[in-house]
Length: 373
Image 1 (cartoon, rainbow, N blue to C red):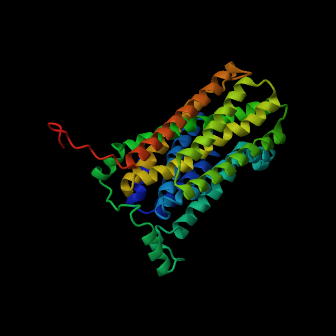
Image 2: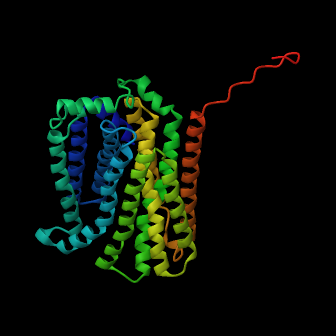
Image 3: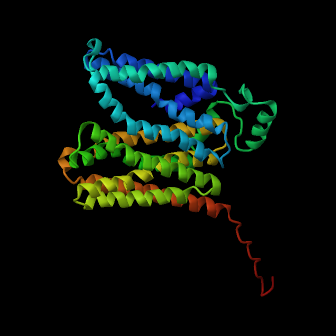
């Protein structure tokens, strides 16, 4: 809901001020959750926490496009996404460790968890105000020649535009915005639902507590390596659809295996396949979107729209892998496979459209009149 206003605010202010502000606010709300005493307070803080958090990802992605050329941005975004993937992998281990703090200084373990996550976030947010350069030209560690070289390197990849109704409306009416939003939505459904799926599969293996949390890490690590490798390939070849397609085919296979296999060990191995493709989509898709929209204001709004649409998949994923489907969850596995197939077709269709559009069209034949040219 707040992704678009957040990125417009970033364009109106500056990356250091806005990103620093929302990160500090995000951490503050997170700490405040540790003090709630009732459901109403929890829901209210969760709402404001989500509003602050919503602008972070699209803001960071847009900020990166100010520094890197479209032929090198996929790798940079994927490195940022590695931290997101690893945070998901290690989150369970952190929760398990914090569970032993229950009762310390009279606080429940879950309250300690929000304090441990919130306080460092506040400190990082404050630091961003002072250390994050708003652009290459305002960087304190780059020499004048470095700044000139970066400016020349990025020439033609960004069109400077003011933030106004005309420039921002262009993102809403640009077809690329909705194509990339569909790609993110269809890939996001498996991303959000995999966390539910992973805990179920590992429980069926007979593991619990720390062992179960540690077993969630390897599939995420494999996904991170595949993601970085794919993004490196994209930047080297400028072909975005095929690396995405490879990961999606692997993951579709993984979900089909999950729906058909009875062995718990086989299902765990299939998790590695299922996790690879969805996480691989986001960094490449954002880079693809940035290359298709060169106006700064339109790009900021388009990135925010795509992120907002992708978050809808989190709501849909909450309806998957319900207890009524146990123990095989066939419908949810097939649903994820179909969602990834939609993503695959959309990516290949976009690639075909752009390649066909860029090909030289054959010259029209001269008309024949009375048997002569």
